[in-house]
Length: 188
Image (cartoon, one colour):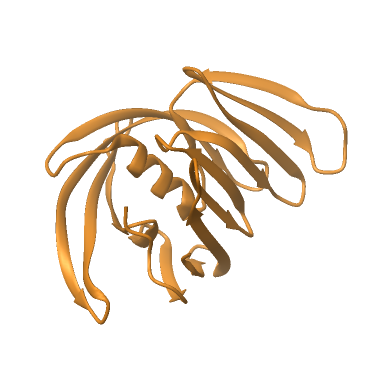
């Protein structure tokens, strides 16, 4: 069960996380997000909380559904969007999206996501093209560690960035630094 710390470079905030496969999928829990996926890596239960807002949602058939409410109040607004999942500041979302696409090296896939940003957890629907550029094995004390390099392009702005994954841990991504890893990634 991987456990560690990510540093969010923009605000120097630490995110302590742990994640583990379960009988029906995978779960990522941190200070920022709680993401549960099923055996096909679909985000079936997601919860995000900021000091002022709470979002709870997940996939229901082809649609992503969520409720956004003030942290201390009962007022809630319901939302539905045809999308494959959420994307947020937490690296757990990157793992869930990458694994759900099940790409082979060199293979691209376009994916529609709802990006939740900022302290207000504002929702914006985006489309990205993910491509698994390569998988490179690195020697470790526990044996070879396959590291996947993804190229992710925002199809609206054409901005491209890289994400490096080892199993269910993000090793590198824009604005994210893995600063501690207490246990090795889970490789599936």
